[in-house]
Length: 455
Image (cartoon, rainbow, N blue to C red):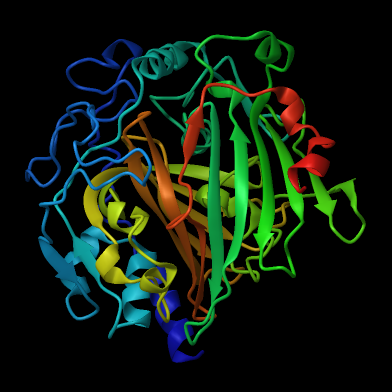
């Protein structure tokens, strides 16, 4: 066994000693939105040490510095680094670091570091979203047969008081992300020497599950979670391809459907299979299809174990990485992104472990997700190979889009620790960031619409 693989195996065996599932307060449906629990089911109070503050509603006002023609500005510009974690001192902070974070520090001891800032529980959502999450606590039902799904939930996360790991996975998959969102974005697979070719494109996403009031369309298609349409605009070699994916809520009732517009064929073709462990397009095999937004799709190939809560340093309030004034060359460095632009904070997360079922296939044998309690977004994940060695670690650098408001990742980073490479998607610096709309014509998300989308 080489030194790198031995290190990854050792770190992968570290127990989550800081998990506190047995000691975590347990809510009831009547507690949600009350003095102890937020409407999304998070603990409203801070921690005993005072290093995690109480949740006081998140960002509720647009900062005076915000310019509607540019990206969201940093609402905490005066915050300074509290301390920095490096490979030299990470042992002293191991209780608040994931296995993947420790492996990344060990892999790049001279250049990668974790800058820790004051914790800002900035996640916030519209009041009607909160109201529906509270209702979901008593009306949502987990579908366990077949590929699985959820029945009865509306608008946002269906299980604000989770008792099973798979419920947390569905909370992430069905978290409120707006109703329709458009953005221009970039992707980059960075080589060992730090070289990359930027792949630019556009995305248009509809979330019919997230509408405040049912419409004739949502009543006609009650099982529709997400309609995702994207196209590549550069470089010229790839420009002109486009894809469409329709994601249902209950995938036992109606499986995922996906189409591709092929520039070579000049026609739309149905993808026979698109999901799980397949390599994501244009990722150079550094990310799987089901790692979009760190996880998506049916959870049926893994047994999910809810390990409780843990205080962990996670990427948060990533307004420096989100800035209109930062170039891609400022972000993408050899081995990892620029640590000076990343912001980590101490937050409580739900820890969910997935182990591959004996009769299922996937490139990962084990996955661990760290899910932010204030948003139900997976903030970090660690993925293990067939031999049980830590293989990849991923970070979702999130901001609060306070004009909506909604908490979403602005950039996702996927590190392949064994290949010493990484992949970044959702780069929007110098491009149009997320633009939020109230609704969409369903005809815009039909296979025929791809023909017009690429023109």
